[in-house]
Length: 594
Image 1 (spheres, rainbow, N blue to C red):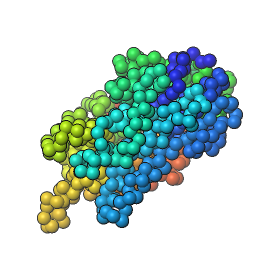
Image 2 (cartoon, rainbow, N blue to C red):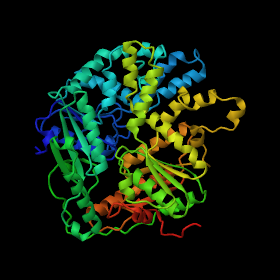
Image 3 (cartoon, helix red, strand yellow):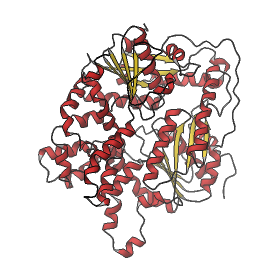
Image 4 (cartoon, rainbow, N blue to C red):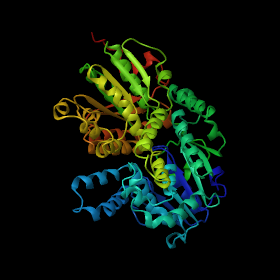
């Protein structure tokens, strides 16, 4: 048996959680094999929207328990959260179709279209697996690839009647909406949440990469889960570059130093957790042989071979900035999951435009607030500021509580306060702050880092939180000459949305999901940026050569399936900090526009 801490005396339930692309699925699959090989009966369950458990094992699994014939005592199940969410929406909207006006039904559907609904519907699906049902009686261990977030668990713990609260129109229903049809399962949900919080039965494994931004996010997840009683947590730092032979490859040496620095400055709350470190492997983590090797604590065998991967000339970031600069002004919004490098790329684009003599306002709502550190200086034509999401959210919460919450009873007010602690609330509050800046984009470039999702924008539109409130207060003459922020985002002549991702399967699928989300809101992304690509660099370290080769399939998917235009930004030896390095990153060495 492995010496890994998270596998010492494992309880019945093991949950792997973390951001997309950190290796949750591979770790969950490898853990399942190790336990099954040790004589345990194991069920592996994936609730990841981008699940590739079947692909990892080389078989089709789907939404039914399927025996992994090559591994005695192991079975797997893939819950499709999108299908679960659609079935859930149909269950709620079916009875009111043809009864309520279409516009009302459409509003209900939108309230049920966000990430909260998908997650709660998935939780609805695997609740039975947590409550000693007949289905799981035959298994010693149940391993979950992707755990519910603290916010979802907290919602499921709420007292009171959600349905009555919503039916009486007491809340904005940004996240309570998905709970409208779940009253019947309250007892089962309580049992499931109790199982999650019991360290004798459940263990959460937080999976991360050795990157400072990623580790900060994991620290927030840890605190959120601890606050609701899920205290038995382990940390796994995955994909660490081994030191061996990095001296032959300057990029490999730089990555090694960067990762070691991130580990040396681990957030304090994480340093208290039992922690395992797993080195990056040179092989694809597909198939039983590879998975069995994943959790073995050994240096990768390079076989004494010499490798070289030569940089591939993909479309560059400078080609996008050249095209952006032709307009002289406009709104540039960078969107994407945490840890993909939005802040750095936003700064690089802003610096490039300012370098050309164009007036630019760069703004961010990044809680990490490292924009000033990224720029490390001032330059002509560039104004920089930061929106404080905590301050804006509190301002918005107080406004809603003083207006909508003023006449609620204690139970209704408690439910409204919980709804206002949802991720949607922060997005709405930050967007309203952004809206004050958006007006400038008619006269200069406004570059925004961290933007609301399409679901949040549609909620704003559908519930009248902003767009319709503005229209309602105007006469017909004013409306004809007025543009709301939502309308500006939908106008491709005024706004360019740049989706930022990595050349890895899960981040690309997540960006594609975000693009579909935005399209529902009538917003068409202008371009994709694939950041930190090894395939766009020249490397000789065998591990990095293999990674570069692995990236090609995902870059091809972006180029041919997802993006109208795209750019690939290479992984650099040094972090692009400071104006000169940001200029180099974005092609600012080219001629300055006069």
